Length: 108
View 1 (tube, helix red, strand yellow):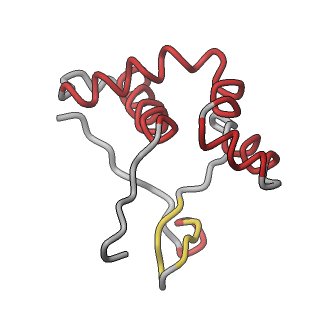
View 2 (cartoon, rainbow, N blue to C red):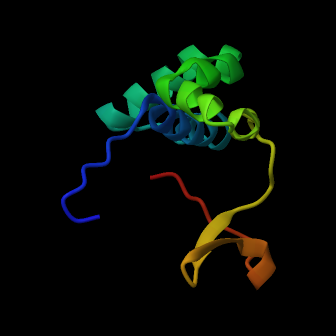
């Protein structure tokens, strides 16, 4: 990707915010960086209408226009999978498929 600029979109901010919200609200993590706080607030603002917001953002509209509206719908599912994707041999695999079943998460 040399010479190519890849920008993040609002959906990246929401995704980070959703993970942060889960860590804060469910697992008791408390001290957040300003960036993490911003992502958390962005997720909180969109969470109740996330499917609609994802379909309405620039990337969602673009994907729908080229025939990937169903993919946007799947991407908007919250807590829709128990899979923990990891990269193995240049592809995503479910961590449990390689015997990884427990993940240690500890608040700082």
